[in-house]
Amino acid sequence: KRSIVIDLASEEGRDLLLRMAPKFDVFVENYGPGVIEKLNLTYDVMKEANPSIIYARLKGFGLTGPYSGFPSYDWVAQASAATFSVTGRAGDPPTRPGPTIGDSGTGAQLALSITAAYVQKQRTGEGQFIEISMQEAVTLFMRTLGLRTWGEAPQERTGNARGPGTDVYPCKGGGENDYLFVMIVTTAQWDAFCMTIGMPELISDPRFETQRGRFDHGAEFYEIVKEWTLQRTKHEAMKELGSAGVPCSATLDTYELFTDPHLSGRGLVEELEHPELGTVKVMRMPALLSGSDVPMEVAPTLGQHTREVLCELDFSEDELEGLFDRGVLR
Image (cartoon, rainbow, N blue to C red; front, side):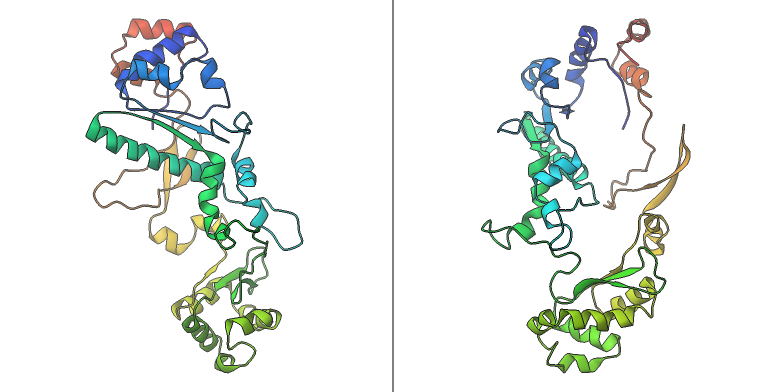
């Protein structure tokens, strides 16, 4: 990415953007409700400047409907898409989730939509209008839970437990995040689990022989697993169970994401030099493409490339100096 700063509230700034419009393929805006209309930079206006433009709008609640004029942020979108309602323990209030899927999840879906529109433009020469609502984007991540009741009843909060064999267990060390998450789904995984913790007799124990039994005797089951995990660090427990084919993971914290040997070995974390912050650690994109690897770069400072980009678009130095002097550019 490169960063340029234009004062769109000024007539000169708006006209400058419209002069630039024929040179680019995609325009994206996620201002608050009504801002782009006040700037008079709607799709119709931009399309007049560039008939084949792809014009994307991201809004908290979309452009239509009774909530369309409401402001939104990540967790507002999540609350409106039911993520709060399924997070936390039964009997407790709805809980704010940690991950920012409202921002990141919406952005990923918008990028995918723009990519699809660009592929179509390559074939037809025509652009199009894209609208995405943060609320609706977050519902994409709620469909597995939502389909359990097919819209007939709300999904209950269950805390960390999600059926028999799926829970978080404390481990040796006793730290804030010294826990192991285990997710036993199949009979084969249950058998492997019992063998690994040295209790093969549990396989035929009437209390735990079936999923229903493990559910009914969940408290007893939890204590058995807890006794085993407390004798091991979360990484030791993960290694033993994971090697045996039992789905599980140490509950890593955000610091450990930068130090985990598995992630480090895969090259997820890189160190880059930032002009203002010095050496910073960043995470690459999760997808690895064998034929089009793009090196990581630090995010630009605000307006870092204004002059560079406009020079590439054939604006003269004299014109640019005047625009900078009048505050239209920065």
